[in-house]
Image (cartoon, rainbow, N blue to C red; front, side):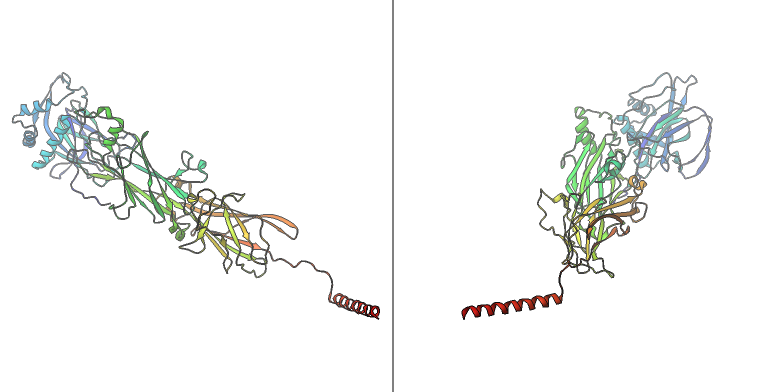
Length: 604
């Protein structure tokens, strides 16, 4: 995926803090890059930054996040803690003047205070309610941050959260009014920048990072034995097998992230398929919660002009507008915009067809299908267009083949040409599995059952015929039970009246069913083994017999091998001998002579 890293993301987390005394050690950096092992002061307080937990339960780790910390004002509490006084840090005087358009310290402070909709007086220890993400104060803080950066003012401290610190991090600071700006490079990453937050007048301050990002899960639906597959016993999981030509169902599971603070929100699914899978564009369905989205109005399916290697994209150009339209239409036009509840489930379903390219690669490694999600990840006013992306998530499907030999029971055996067969999926042989000559391999390939209408067979369907080497190969089989019925025996041999029951069983690793990792299809972690048995029924020389045989298989090529035997027939019994024939002929001659003589005497 091609993303231009235009700039380091800067999303302000502004904290108004009046902090009490306590000393603690913390590794921080000053604006010159010098490292201090400890920050100590006569009056020292603490800011604890907590990771954000989204509506879908995903926690955005703090590990590796980077913050510029600006002490914009010094703060001094009164002895009784009933009042607080701010004085401007000389480093940021010009930035404050530019952002507020005021010239004096008091005017600047009064301007900022005028944006306070949750005023706290008489007790600086009292918790202050946050301003909303659409408030004038949120945008002021961003403009102040922008002025500081534009003027080249150095941060008071630069803090990088250590690896392994996932959910919270405590920063020790002097009393003051602090602007904390996240400068983590989130563009093109699976993360999101922090949104502005404000709070004030509490010695031990806790703030929650206001950032969220979506995740996506891809699944494939197995068509057989569904009740025993998937967390919900509905066949949805990471691994499946199909016949060539079958429709393969896929889906994505995702959730609407917290989009409060964003003007617009881009949400796009990127999908890439193995060449043995053919995408069906008209099959796409998108639901958010209980609402079904409208193609070309709410989303679009794009197959051209996309990144190399990708098959298609499903793009929601502004997910926030879509949610507002379906869930918050009564709030349209509200100024300022109200904060909203998100977390609705996103379900995207679509189909592909396992095409004839699958003939070339039955068995391992299977045919993978990958997805990643691209999404807006900078709610900052100047962060429009920046996107992050999830890691690729992959599922896989397999198909198999049967290599058959038609032979007699002589020693050595003789391969039999001209035997004809049909394949069925039911024991009564009413549901034919149609085949045609393979276009890219030897033998025959299965025709899509989904294309069969009524009782009419497809125009390209043919019977399976053993060749001069007795071979008949059927390519593109599912893991299921089939019935192979002989419809014509080789000349001189008795027809097998009963179909042969063939049980094809692919054995998969349980973990890979739910946690498939790209590339595992080539190993025994996913397709562990291929098993096959055949049940025969025979009637020869007045004796009926039934027996079952385990068939040899090759899991790498996805092949099961079967030999169908026609026993050599004997001539029916005959009566008489050569001497008898001579005597009969002689007797016949004598009788003829007597008759001739008798007729001659009668004439005389």
